[in-house]
Image (cartoon, rainbow, N blue to C red):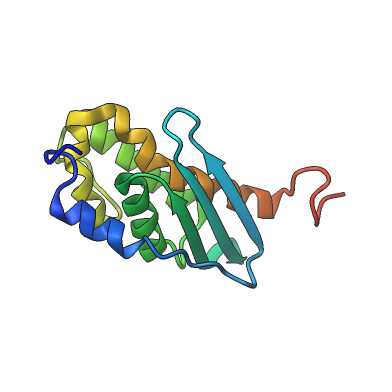
Length: 150
């Protein structure tokens, strides 16, 4: 484990997201996997009027993936898919540009600044975002053969 990457703030955030939270009344549950590193994220959401009203998550993965899921869980209630997508794009730019001038709609994302030195780990941060955005998309447009689809 790299001390430069896994700083105290990231580890604290990861610890906050270690315990799975499953929503019994979720509108949808989505699992995404990163076959390259083995991270797996399951996201449960409830959605009302295009806004997330509840979120649960289970992460089997590295501390970065756990920390990202915990941050998302703390920030997304009340957010729309477009707001979450914008936050995801901001995080990508923040990590890629190595520029603190990138405006983060979720200021707590700044805790991930150490990932700038390990850009290949950005996908660990992005996997929970991918799961949430896929869940929102699947609620609005269920895949063929799924409940709610024609």
